[in-house]
Length: 135
Ligand SMILES: [Fe+2]
Ligand SMILES: [Fe+2]
Picture (cartoon, rainbow, N blue to C red):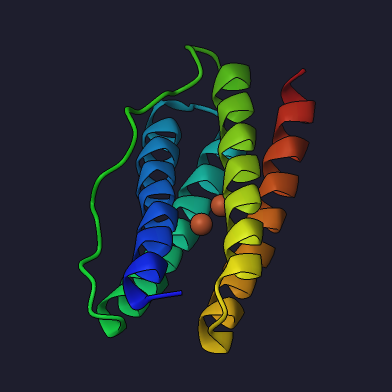
């Protein structure tokens, strides 16, 4: 696997983090209830740390970190809709990190991605709990 191929994968991961940061921040602005709003804000900060770690790995490999992301989808106009979307984003991130951890041979990169993966699993659990509490 070439560095360029690894950079492409890491930029995919980074793109997902950028999307998550923007969606979670915006959701925290429009959510009145204190608990979900705070949680969205805190998790957006975790995603920013993930973005930083990925960007560092990309630069170390000679790549340029992307700032691109898919069109933002907020899951409708209700708290339940927002939280369902956040659950989906975390599930997508978990699937992608698992795939990349299995594919990328570099041990240092695997370790960073595994650390991020564990945090995404915690985020998923947190958003699922919040979603269950609004149903
Ligand atoms: Fe993340
Ligand atoms: Fe996450």
